[in-house]
Length: 406
Image (cartoon, rainbow, N blue to C red; front, side):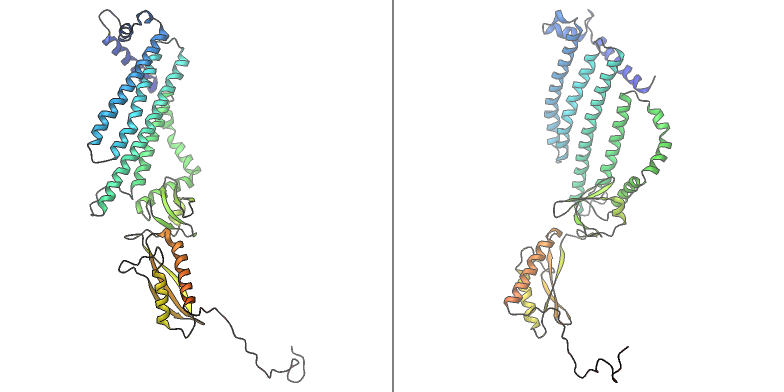
């Protein structure tokens, strides 16, 4: 007899023992006595009505459990300073009541005159539904708890007390992947038991299957290991703004088992395999103590221009642009005289922005403002040009002695 059959017989024996223990000295079981109390004594021997009555009791008890869970567990969670447990209670209430309904259906199935085949299928379906219900619940609760711990660690990072926390924003994806794999593995095992699949044979062949899968899914395993490396090495984390060596840029929205997801400024999601991310040269514009970064706008004026006057004009134009930081020491706009070019005096207008997403808007505003200010104040903006001088007295086309050229 396999493990699932043993568990099923044990559950049935437990139900029969509970019913026998609760039976009255007259030999009436609790269901018969309850049917007599509600005026259904004459229908107590009808198997279909008895099963329906049991299922109805399960529905009533599930509603009662849901109300008690909402009041009792909700009151307990409300006393804690954390919001994650309040949300976890909301996700646990429904699975508890649904489990009561499934157990009621399981119990109501017992007296029905079903064959072994239909009875097995119905009970396997009920068990599978229960496994799926709790799988979804545990996935949601696990995510909520982990992100609550991560938020606490984020709050402690400013004070330097988050070093001993295992769950932090940097390690959150790793723990989420581990919890997800554990829950999915357990639910798969439960589904196999529900349908009486011999798990021992599967485990015995897991070694050979693992080798075959390893060869067949090298790319997937490479991405999985690369994901672990990314989380451990932390070249970037959730919320960072990255620029890839392909020129694509965006903010990290998810670090998964196989890939990293980025959302661009255009609202397009980029999915990059983790193995590619590990090998790529990445610019993390969210690195450092904050996300502020400096932009450079090149500008040129003609030779003979008043350098200081042109500098003041461009500086005033840059300061008046929306999105440019102009109220913090060390990051105010400045204009540098960089070089004396072939046909121009070359300047660089340096401005700071608060977030990488503001780059293109600020570049447009500052470039437009600088050009407008220079032209309105009479400064000449040069462009590359070449002068061609033709010398006279060239030798005749036939050569110095009238001989044709070779």
